[in-house]
Length: 174
Image (cartoon, rainbow, N blue to C red; front, side):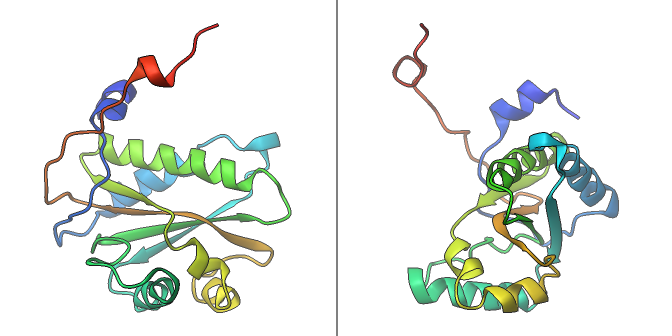
């Protein structure tokens, strides 16, 4: 596994995957990284739902997303073999932040394992809209929890440079 800093610098949002499934070990490693993420007040209020790409619920989520956003050239998970939905306790005001931290841990662990990943927010309206209860049941999201963020994972089928940035414009040091 690469160093954390190397993983941060190399990682990019993967929008093309091979058909190769993740191994149980790879899946365990990325989920373990998400579970190891710190949470506010150590509440550990996040829930992870792992969905293989052949599960029909992904198409249902895609169809619901398309109602508000319109159809896209690719589905929301770019045919990745695995999607992880992170949900959080809706009564806890820090769940969205905690889910973001867990998502970052997952994608950095994936990078360290040589996997591609994509953090997904575009399904939020679909997941929290009129079919919320239906999706929560299908995805085994606990009562009182709601969608926070999702991650697509798999073996990348493309090469891409990580995004660039302008530290002089984005950072102020007092």
